[in-house]
Amino acid sequence: MSEILRCENVCFAYDKEQILNNVNMSIEKGSITAVLGRNGAGKSTLFLNINGVHKKDSGKIYYNNEEIIYNKKGIENIRKKIGIVFQDPNYQLFSASVLKDVSFGAVNLGFSYEEARQKSIKALEEVGMIDYIDKPTHALSFGQKKRVAIAGILVMEPEIIILDEISAGLDPMGAHEILTLLKNINKEKNTTIILATHDMDILPLYCDYAYVLNKGSVVLHGKSHEILLQGDDLRKYNLRLPRISHLMEILKKKDNLSVDESISTISKARKAIKELVNGKNHE
Image (cartoon, rainbow, N blue to C red):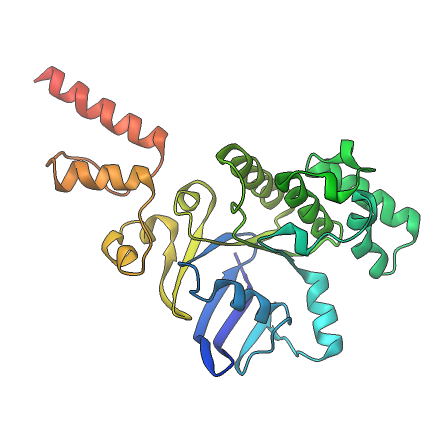
């Protein structure tokens, strides 16, 4: 894989409070990367600096190895390539109907009404919301609004989609459906996905790589399975292991069972425990 986005020593302060402190980050093209951290760690602020809503105080951000210049033209160009889905979709949806909302971005890019409509139909089909095309956005459920917000980004055909606390406000099934949708988009279109979350159960199921932010600084980073082997460090930064990882940790450290602590999914845990039980049965 090649690098698509890079942050070098990015700093940002708000009202004299340092929010980002020398953030360094490299995102590979076609990957799904988690940015982990408790509330207030700086995740949302980092994304808003990348997208030009906030203007960094120092440091550099590169897109496809070219430094992003945060003037009017530079911000317009980068927002065509990098789309953000906010934690609360109500901040993102403002048109009278689903179709008008989703087509807004395509119209802004200069497509004709008919071209924008066709792109919007395709995007709504991809997120499973085509049956709601003429519905008023205020009549949708929270999860449906998130899907429409994603469609509004997809219609612009970005290379990177950033999602801030994507599972917030969703029940477990709704979160699973949204994350599966994003994984399919990533696989089928090679779209780079960046997820901000403090939900650690997302990490082993959906993400290739992870960065941990604490007080505006990157304190850990690595492949997902590497991060999950650092349970003590994660706890130090007010994060927990995924439930399955925690179970395997307890079985090994407290119950002295010979299990692989790197296991973090139900299917692998089931296999390991069955092998352990069958091995004991043969003794």
